Image (cartoon, rainbow, N blue to C red; front, side):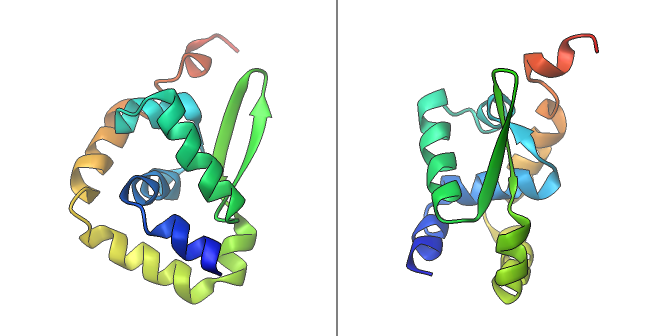
Length: 113
């Protein structure tokens, strides 16, 4: 539990969680939406994954992250609190607007299938 609360105590990690509440995302999409460097985004994503809040998978050379269903299931009250209170954070509206502009911006999504 300590690791979860440590992870949630950093604003950039909450911003990442906000994006991933919308859908799973590639690291490059998260970097673009939040205007973070690759190393900064990776550090926060690693911390959120280590605490059990996120899980990831690789597709070719891209890493995708999503909210862990196990985290949601095992922390229902905390999850409901996060969903409700994240809307009151000062970054909420701006980051959600940026998400709408840049989701799907990763080069992996622009290649023909």
